[in-house]
Image (cartoon, rainbow, N blue to C red; front, side):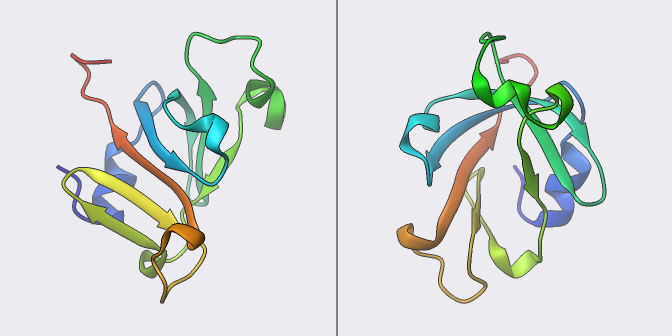
Length: 107
């Protein structure tokens, strides 16, 4: 179970899958995303099993990026990783995205 940003950064690799549990854009909730690239700035992901999804076309086909930001922007609870717009307020209004990393067997 991922407990902090350093663990998340070590866990995510190309091919890892995420399930989006909550998102600032409601149409993204429930999506399974494939990690396409991880670097020191953040990670890129595409929508799994939807090659024609508009999100997949961004950033040269790598999909949208989620910046790592500062650890204070993140919250880790029971395997759910959440990132917020604010370091102080971790509320629904400040939520960017909540997701869980899928185990290889489940993915």
